[in-house]
Image (cartoon, rainbow, N blue to C red; front, side):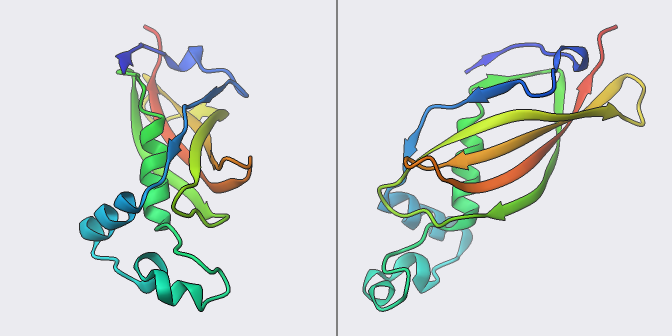
Length: 147
C-alpha cells in the first residue's frame, strides 16, 4: 500500500486497474457472520444448502463487496474523498473456494458544487476465477483539482 496524489485532471475516462485475487474461505463466512449477525442458513448451514437448488453455501453479498473493495485499497489517493457507492448489484453467487479480483474503470467525470473539487465515478466489477462478474457497483468520489 502506498500514497499517490492523483488530481481530478489526472483521471481519464476508461482508465482501468486490476487487483490481485483473493480466495474466499469458510473462515471468511464465519467471521463475516459474526461481524454482521447474519447467520442465515444460506451462508452457514452446509447440509441445508445441499437440499436447495444452489446446492452449497453462498457468500454474503456484503462480504463479497467488502473483500472486493478492500482489494482495491493498494493505492491511497490523499486528494480523493469517497462519497459512497451506488448501483450495487449481486450478479452471481460466490462460494467457498472461489477466487475473486476487482477491476476498476473510470466511467464518469463531472463538476462538483465546490469549485476546488471534481466528481469522479469508478465503475467496479468483482470477477471470479471463471471470468464471471459476481458484483458491480459505482464508487463515487470527490477529487481535488490542481491549484
